[in-house]
Length: 440
Image 1 (cartoon, rainbow, N blue to C red):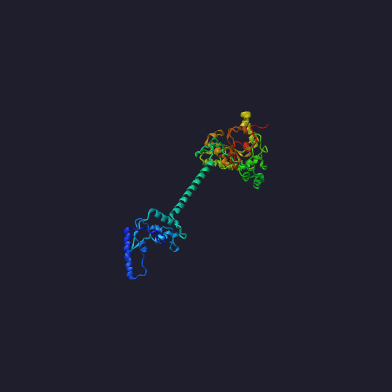
Image 2: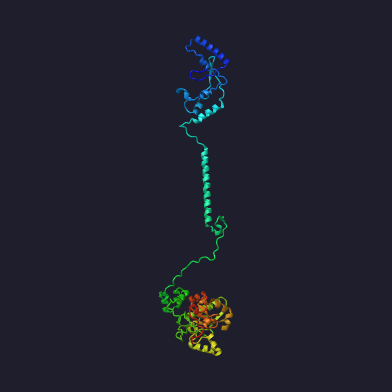
């Protein structure tokens, strides 16, 4: 059966058709009795008859909307139509009452088609659905980026370390770098090149040096020149024209077998007896030397080493003639190794002193070296401006055998430079020629 709209009406079962005719007859009878103007037709009733078992109501709603009139086409999205209008349930009029007829469950193919229609029907105004997956993906990307950055830094550090490590020539071709590479051995550390500063100018151009030399204050002149070492360097380098090593009145004078006193019979003007010092022969010294010997003797006594006495001090030119004559009569030419000729003795300067050790009675000159006083003098005389002039091993330079008892005063500044430099003779100290023998 075909309805006016062009839709095929399913064919009812025989029992249904009989019931429908009976119902039609009843409806017509009641309509005539009531005088109704509009009498339902049989087609109206049949269109709402109970469908047969193979009838599928969803096929009608699933039809293409374009086949329906414009005013009957569904509007809105598929989801809105599904929410507002569930699957249509056909109604059947049975004896004047409408009864909902349960439609059979749509087949699987139709459900899939309806779902596809909903998915394909996109609402342009709808907001996109936000999911948690992108945020989780972002976090993962951040973690991956952090790991990649850490790996790059680690690889960069390893590459830099590998570049800094020394590589042997035979290990450069494909050999793995070992972290336990030993640094190359250095036979000798580089020595920096240090340029020596130029020496100071002429010390005699210094006003304080010139003034001290003019008034005869030798120790003050040495201090003004920069100390004993600086003074010595200036003399050796020729930068001290105002310093005369042959001037018998100066504490820096040098007298030996080739450098006599000047004049030959020189005699110092200020001679005094050392205060507080036992004086065996009644010898005198220059005033500055006398004060220095008194200081030495006092320091030795305070150190507990015993008493030190002055055996012989100043000897005039005449006295030295008698002394050398006595030694010459005993030793002959060998006297020159134990006694100076007149005019060549440090005793004539008032700056030489022969000392002995005393313990109640005083010993001889030859006994001094074996006493505590002799040991103390050798170690500490320089602290008071004195040096041991003739020491063991210096005979080829001085021309004299060792004399531990013979002291020579050169002042505290020069004595300190002499001791600190390890010098053994004044000739070497001032870079003078040795004087083992007399010139004539």
